[in-house]
Amino acid sequence: QKEVEQNSGPLSVPEGAIASLNCTYSDRGSQSFFWYRQYSGKSPELIMSIYSNGDKEDGRFTAQLNKASQYVSLLIRDSQPSDSATYLCAVNFGAGSYQLTFGKGTKLSVIP
Amino acid sequence: NAGVTQTPKFQVLKTGQSMTLQCAQDMNHNSMYWYRQDPGMGLRLIYYSASEGTTDKGEVPNGYNVSRLNKREFSLRLESAAPSQTSVYFCASSLTPPSTNEKLFFGSGTQLSVL
Image 1 (tube, each protein chain N blue to C red):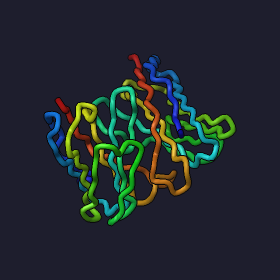
Image 2 (cartoon, each protein chain N blue to C red; image 1 turned 90 degrees about the vertical axis):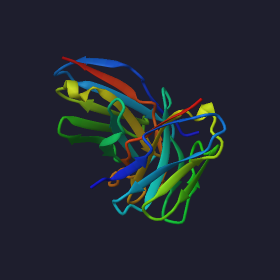
Image 3 (cartoon, each protein chain N blue to C red; image 1 turned 135 degrees about the vertical axis):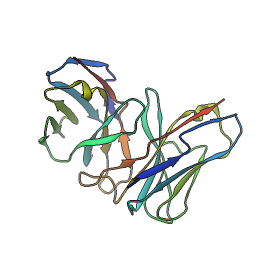
Image 4 (spheres, helix red, strand yellow; image 1 turned 180 degrees about the vertical axis):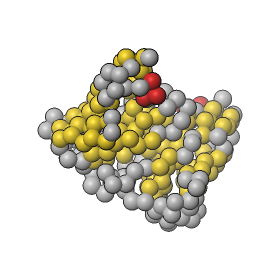
């Protein structure tokens, strides 16, 4: 059974702080990793993807991947109230697979 | 540019009733997907269609059928609705399998309640 685990939260951080969201997955052979943001009552939207070990930065967002530890994280710098949402970690366990496995999501609240 | 369009947005059914959720995309994508999202359960794949003319089961296919009507449209049918199928349903599409260079585009969702 391929699984993706996330702390459901809620995670509360003050405005301007760094928010750190974590995700672990069960299959060491996993290929690609995604972070989706979902506002309440809305559909998910992709904010970051990563497939190689290390860090990938895009604006205030940094995705970090450690395949040996089967761990992927998302850092949000200078958190804003508009970042308050549920963040979904998703893993594609096989190259060319059509099946993304999603975690249950971590709810983030940024307090003004 | 509409992207992925789902209908209806809301639906209430009685146990045993049937219905079809419609999904259409205008991005010329090859692949389409149906997910359900339950509180505390994340998104789970019901069925997907890698390309026109093909469909495959996902993680939770029981109680559902799908039809890839053409390249644009992918429908999800509940033949005999059950309360356990109360959920939010999302249709999604992508040009190729999801990868770091290819993301899923989601529709706005259908809130389905089965009484």
